[in-house]
Length: 193
Image (cartoon, rainbow, N blue to C red; front, top):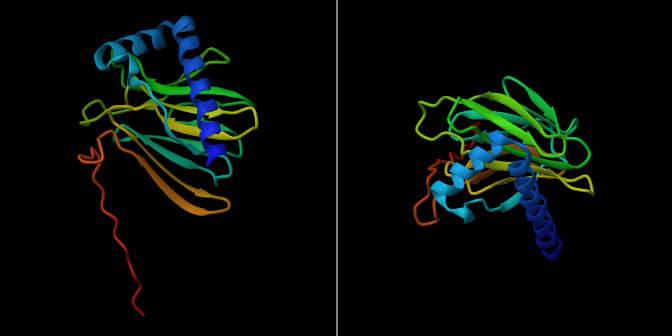
């Protein structure tokens, strides 16, 4: 458990530094960040139990908002949407979100290369769209890759399969435990002989 908490501390530091650098170097990110924190408060961007994406079978599916899907390919360290993709490289941080004002594009901001990539479209008519500062993928110095929802107002669903460990689903729910924002049904099935 200590290793995980130390890793989480390192991930928090990486994401915090990435947000600061992006605010200083990218006007679109700065505007999205500033309007988001003005609306929800300076402490709104927080790291929530990062999930390790290293050692997964390609692809891992990330659903942000309610209907915006992006894929992470661990074999290539590639984040791909319906329009474009971005290779994450050996180390670094990628922030996922959207511009303000809304233009129906999910964006990946890559700090180390000062890139802004349009991953794909989201449907603005859906009840809950991706947040301006939604989530982060971090490639740590040891080569491990993690995702964390940054306390977005819409949450993230992560679906994948571990090379060693089997299938998983993680739901980052934007609501408190007493009033979840995401409802889901689990249907257990048995095959009849």
